[in-house]
Amino acid sequence: QVHVGESGGGLVQAGGSLRLSCAASGRTSSIYGMGWFRQTPGKEREFVAAITWSGGLTQYVDSVKGRFTISRDNAKNMMFLQMNSLEPEDTAVYFCAASRIVSSRPMVRSASYDFWGQGTQVTVSS
Figure 1 (cartoon, rainbow, N blue to C red):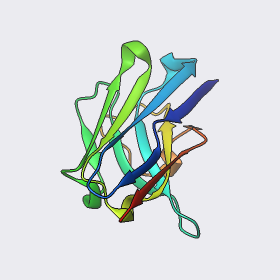
Figure 2 (figure 1 turned 120 degrees about the vertical axis):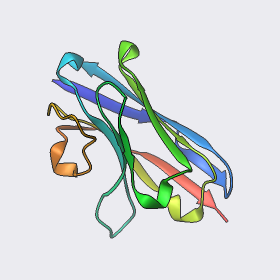
Figure 3 (figure 1 turned 90 degrees about the vertical axis):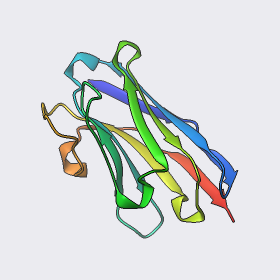
């Protein structure tokens, strides 16, 4: 089994920055692709960013391109999301996800992920 957990959320003013972290534990050797998703009340979970096992390929939802950066440190079983120039529209609960699927491309569908964290709240005030 694999467990993932997020940290780093909080309250920030528009234009500010936050760095989310995701720690994986357990059978981490079974993890390949990883990603970040977010969700607001009454809406479906939305893809934010994804990264391949090697970290060589990344993909972002259009609304965060140029502002967010996803990265990972496999030696430490960690993944990160650096969020800059935050906007009130970025307010959501952010989830870390890990997949056992061996893929050469970042995975954007939530159904591709096997393990999910509990989520961390990010609130951006205007």
